[in-house]
Image (cartoon, rainbow over all chains, first blue to last red):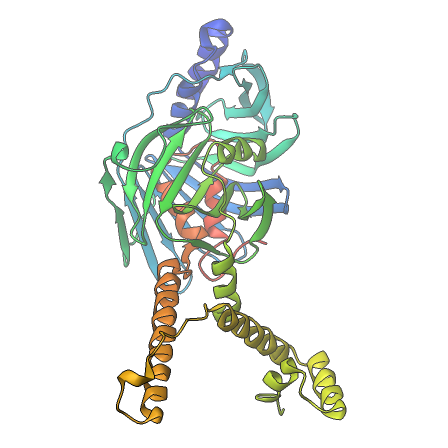
Length: 308
Length: 140
């Protein structure tokens, strides 16, 4: 009933009245309750990254478990993320932060009626300030859930897409988290850090102390988001499938997962690591405004040759 | 497997006989460990050669009543002390470089980011980066 109202309401309002109200759609999607099987496929410079996950969203929490692979379950609710592994071990990451209150540069197209998985749906596109489409989103007409998404590169090609293979509204089934090993990211005064306040159109909302060393800033432009870790030591990616990428007379380490990218590089002041859901061109735009990778000096190279 | 050990230094000095030289070169061609050791020895020797030459102070032998052998010992001691000081300085420089990198766990960083991100975010598929990239493995 609520969903039918959502469809009718949106279409009645359609057009300029809804233009720019991206938050309305995403908030509605956040409040939706559903379960289903989702395919994630991302076409990255390092190859295709795909995953099939069983996803459940209820009471503002999302739970995902890899379908037929590691069986690792991830549950995320506002400020808390639980990882429960098949062997029963688990870890929890908690972080506090205020919802973004940003004037985004994105505009939303007039909603169109669609039909997905034999259900009424609303389809719209999101364009950046220059009118370039950056996402196509399809919301379920009953629950408001985001049931399809295409994240687009600047040239219009698809970077990542999500599709539901099956979908059903659910009333409950909230995710139960475990906390064998809890990590709480303590907030710090962001202005007292070296993290820039704005980067390539992204605004820093807050910053946290990273328990492994360094501070993390959280950035968003209202549609995409990334976290930037700054340390005072050199950094090295710890993930299979990491690729060395030459750029700006030096190199970055890059890792793609389905829907997330991680970039790591040394700077003159230490190290930086970035992760987020940015398409590749936005990753390049952001890194171009951050300190450049440091070229290893002669003594460092000699040291590395001598001692590895 | 018998590796080259001390022969590497002699090899670098060009003091091996032709037969030994061929044997060492042949071994190096098929032994990565020895090639790396050769590389390290070569770099180390280069560093040693780059140490500055210290001028010994001019010593007025007439000012000493000690036998000449004692003067030589003092001169050698000064040279050794100078070399030790230079080595200590180099060690200090090396220590400040501290090239030991901080390991960045991609899944852990993604987890921190997703914990902060609004639910569900634009790409709930981002959770798949964690489900597929537990610390034991990642999606290549």
